[in-house]
Image 1 (cartoon, rainbow, N blue to C red):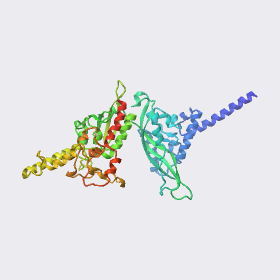
Image 2: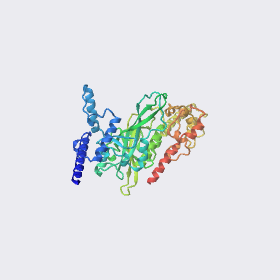
Image 3: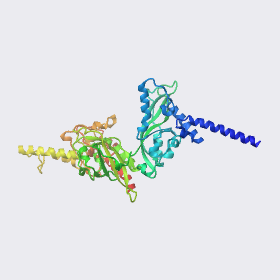
Image 4: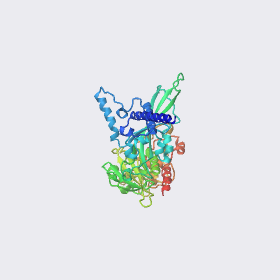
Length: 483
């Protein structure tokens, strides 16, 4: 009786193993891998594959085991191109379900993390990211709470919500191949979208329905792609070194050709003073991310040029640690200038304003001397124009007209930037200091605005517009944690 029971159990196990082997062969993986999978891995990978086919019913081409016939040569070429993109992509593609399970991740993840596709697929992404990034990842995978259906959404309509974020993922590569890592984690820049489907409820009108969160589709890139000290600087790039509060310590000579500033013009000054007012808060967010995670890629931002206008820049920054104490020492940033100088007629920096003021003063003085008239000069011999300019150079003076903007009508901040006239050119002497006496000086330090813009809404703006001081102070307290 016992012999029969043993034989029955052995037969059952053999049949079970054969079924698992057949199931493994159906997976879109090389035979060398599927032949060595255990049962738990087969179930995990099969479940993930079925979920992916539900999200992408047409599959993902030959990489997923299908061999379609192409009647159109162009279509065949496009499919072939798509299958080769993963090989040329300096990153990896991954698809994450709303519960955090990775439905798919490309094999190129092993190049950046040292973790194989088989190991990652079907497991929770939270097992492979830094504990402090769990909350951020949860927000990325969650639909916005205020989402409302719109009339243009059809039944079963699908749409995407853009997602861009930085997370620290576990890296098990050898030190010489891992790039920049901290305590076994590497910063990954992820960009993609949250796939959402909208369902209309039957017989309940246009605006009744529900949303289904299908999952996140994103591409991950290492930050930076190579050691930051090994990046070759081209003609459209310059590098700077700064303290943890972004006060510039060193700039290479290329900055003059790209922005008009000599390196010594910017040394010991915070970079916030040279960023377009509309881009300050994006830079602040990037700065806080850098101090928290050690590396960051900024959004495109406008760096104010010396002789007016701006150039578009994107920066790749990293925190360099002291080799002896392993404590954060400074920030090194490689900056890519993406455009030529734009809006040259707009004078947005205090340095340019000072140059313009000197030009105006000298012209007015010459005119005054020719006419031998004293009514246009003050006791020091300067013209009335220079007195008007000095009014703007007083540290505690705020241009009320600068805030006379109707913020309630949804107009763009860009509407503040208009060609300047001589009477509207101004600057603040506090621009060279990291301490600003009042939050209202944020805009007057950063850019200029025509005096003709007036509105009774100024008092309301004072209470709601974030001040420039908070940009320095808030990030400074992050820096103090590293001091």
